Structures are given as structure tokens and as C-alpha cells.
Length: 449
Image (cartoon, rainbow, N blue to C red; front, top):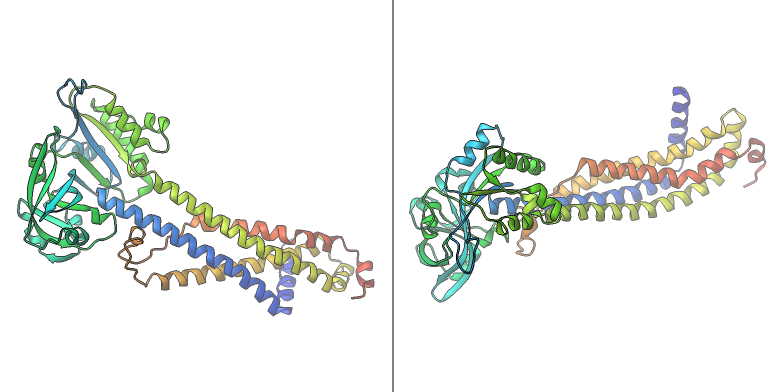
């Protein structure tokens, strides 16, 4: 059996080298298809990853734990105003460490939405109250354009993106007013001084401003060591849903009140965070009630976009391969006619009909595999070159990494595309191989071309 397969492979290789120009053209067509699909798939997946990384940097993690309280009941709100606050500064961290939850790094911060006002100009801003001394990763991510990060120790220090600073026409040293609401719903105003202007890492990062957590807590009338969100960044982002579910169960087992991700996913699988918020809004309780969400829960569109990307690239590959396979099918019908007397000779010398058909199938598979490998290698080279270019575009910045395109290839996706190619190749030459296997030696030898 092994000798027979070896003989078939040798015949297939010999036949391919006899018509080098035709073989090369077919391989190039297949290679071009794989080149296009590899680049598109890698570029689209990389763009989604960059978007996810920007969101992760903006919100501080991939798994989030928040605490909520109910304020005193009023005529307008009989359940009491919903306040987002965790008063025990060490509870969540100690719970994770005690139960050996692994993560790359964690941050606990306070966030607030409001307006920055400077010289009659105003912009909407999301203020992030961070503990800079305990978050070196955050500080290192700032690319300073003007100012000095050493001044972050000032209680009223403010860090703005270049886009926001330009919109307000602010310079380092200027003071700006920030208007927002306290956790109790009362209007409040604070004053901050710009100590550093940082480069926009992307369109989303330009929406954020950074201040000291203790200063923002005071403005929002929160305890000095309290916060509203504990965020962790996982080394493997694919584990975020599993880790979120485990943390939720740990809080429940600890006797604390916590929302249910399972119920939220069941009620609204497309956007579970909305259902989790509804669980808080529609219920009454005393003390602190926790919620745990993953980045997938908060931004479910990321997974949807990634799924669409793979579907689109698969369709593109399918269309390209079908076109190429039609060419292969027509070419091998012509090859069958050219080799009909040769087939008769091989059959007369003892080759079976099935082995004759296998020669044609093996030739096509060798062509497809060679072309696909060449296209894949060319795609990798093209991606490496394309990744060197820098794009200065606010519109594209969502999907870039510091102005550069990123390419991410999925081994599963590539393997699936190869399997699809093999199946289509076999189908393309099936008719020719079947006809070759049914030709009788006598009829083939009598054929006049």
C-alpha cells in the first residue's frame, strides 16, 4: 500500500513538472486567494484586538466588580437612590487573593461623568480617579507631550489628552472647573490644575481625564479610601467570563448580596449588563450589593464583530476558491483528454482505475497545498511590511496600536481554511478523476487526438 501511494505521488509530481507553466499559473491563482484572505483576516482580527485593548485601558480591566447601595427612600424614589460605591477598601482584593484568583494586575478606582469648563469653553469628560502611586502600569502608559508626571502628587492634579486640552485651549498650569453630581445626586463643582498633557492612544482614550482618587472621592462625597470599581486584567482574556462567574460565586458564598450573571445572560444574552443593572434598579436591599461583569458582558459587540469578521473572510475565501476550483476543474478536463493514451498505457501495464483517478486528485492537492503555503508566507510578509506604516487618523485610531496596524491570525481559522481548500479541490477534480478511473485500456489506446 505504501509503495503504491509512493508511486502515485511520483507520477503526480512528474506530471506537474511536465506542464510547468500551467502548474505555476494554477498555484499562483490559489496562492493569491490565500494571500488576500490571510491579510484581510489578520488585519480585521488585529483591529478588533486593538479596539478591545483600548477599551481595556480606558476602563481599567477585563473583569469588573462594583458595589451598590440604596440611599434613603423619598417620595420620588421609594426604593432610594442607587449609589455605586464600595466602602470596604480591602474586601475585594483580599477575597481574590484568599481564593487564588490569578490576574496580571488590578486597580480600584472611582469614575465620574461631567463637564470641564475653562474660559467659557466646555467639554464633556469622564474623570477617572486613580491611585497613581499604586498603578505604575497606568502611569507608564502615559506618553507625555507637555508637563511633568512628577506633579501627580498634587491633590488637585489633572491629566488630559491632547485632544481635550486643545478643545479647551488649556496649557499646563491652567486651572479648570469640573461640574458633576455627588453619589447622592447633588450638583457639585471642583477645581483641578492641569499638570500633564498626554498623547491620544486612540479616539476612546481622548475621552478620559485622570485625577487623584482621593480628590475625586472628596468631590463626590465618598469616603477617602472608597471606590466604585475594582478591575482586574487577565493574562488570558478568553478566561474572563469563567473568572467573572467564579468571583460572583465567591462573593455569594461569602454571604454577600450579589447580582446574577446567569439570569442576566438568560434574560438578555446580547447585552447582559443591561439586565444586571435592571436587577439592581428593580430590587431593594440593605447594605452593599455587588455586581460582577466581564468585558464581554459590558461590550458584547466585540465578540459579535469578531464573529462577523471570520464569517466575512470565510465567505471571501469561499468565493475565491470556488472561482479557482472552477478553473482547476476545467483545466483537468482538458488534461484528461491530453493524457488519454497515456492513461491507456498505464492501465495496460496493470494500474487500476482507482489508482488512475488518484493520480489526478493527488496532482490537484499538491497544487493547492503549494499555492496555499506560498500565499500564506506571502501574506505574512505583506503584513510585516504593512505594519511598519503609521497612520495619523482619528477615524482609524480606534483600530490601530499607536498608529500602526496590527495583524492577528487564528490557528483554528487558518486550519479551517486549509480544510475547506482540500475539500473544494477534491470536489473540483472528482469528475475528472472518476472519468479517468472508468476509461478502458483498449478504448484509450485506440483514441486519436
